[in-house]
Length: 313
Ligand SMILES: [Mg+2]
Image (cartoon, rainbow, N blue to C red; front, side, top):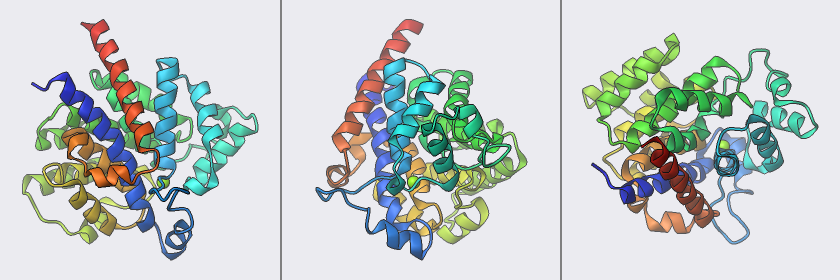
């Protein structure tokens, strides 16, 4: 049974794992043009590693929960929009939604302006670990709150499904659940064939303890910006590397290519939920943009969580 101190360390580990994964993955994202462009934005004026939209939206979500004590979709939509900066590398669909919201369009309209069914990108999944911190005690509530936070920018059912699966994995990692049980739960909570098939393959790889190469991981589970092409990939990586070092996880995930910042961010948060902040290399934390601000947000989320748990008990 873990103590509250352990849980606090896991909260910080989840948020710092997410942000560090994002910043460490960003230079390896996409093709030649994306990598070349990022060289101009990769450092803050004080020389720290800069993070991207994954961390920005997670900070927005955390601050929004701390302010409102719930997911207030209208408030959160405006917060996302006001934080938008082109140089953070937002996806094309999310950029359009946030610019529309800034011009006064309701998120309920903006999120279906480009795609009728909504974006099926992984933008909701990359911030869902924050909700796992608060709502890990109740799966249905966690899924409901993740849905609310995701649909502001990513209304497609696959975007929501991926976000719920990533959030669910983080909540199970916080509770130190066995790897095979977690991937079985991910399979159980997968609704669509594409997620189910990838979860089934991950289960086989993890059960047989297979040494699958980064190329095979990308080819079979995906490495793209769609939720269905990245969420199970990140879940598999977070589970496979849970007993290895944070650096080993990042090194392998970078080699998977594609949407590397989000893959590193999601798998980094799962790793952090298992292993806590104390196991993340200090030199990486010291080199991260706004590291202490993120750590402090994680501590405040922990305080909120304790209040919720005390109310339940
Ligand atoms: Mg990003």
